[in-house]
Length: 72
Image (cartoon, rainbow, N blue to C red; front, side, top):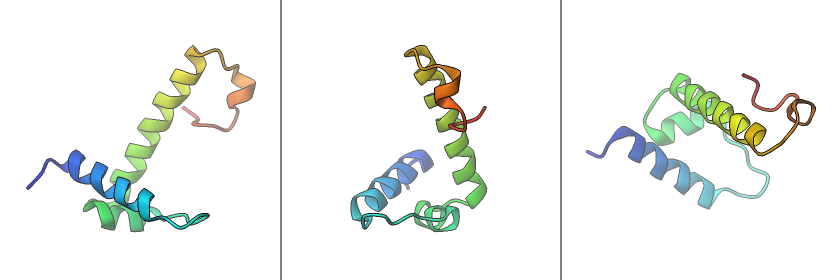
């Protein structure tokens, strides 16, 4: 069996490619497709948003511009 993060990456890429415009997935739907639980999906999302926020700050975005975005 493949490494869990590879399996999750593949499942997310497949979901993104097949997604209808405007369609949003729940944590549960994503978790089922990725073979993990909803808490894992939430944790991955939280870490990714914190990383993105740091990167945006380094690129010169001001705190006010990031208000409500990737709190952390």
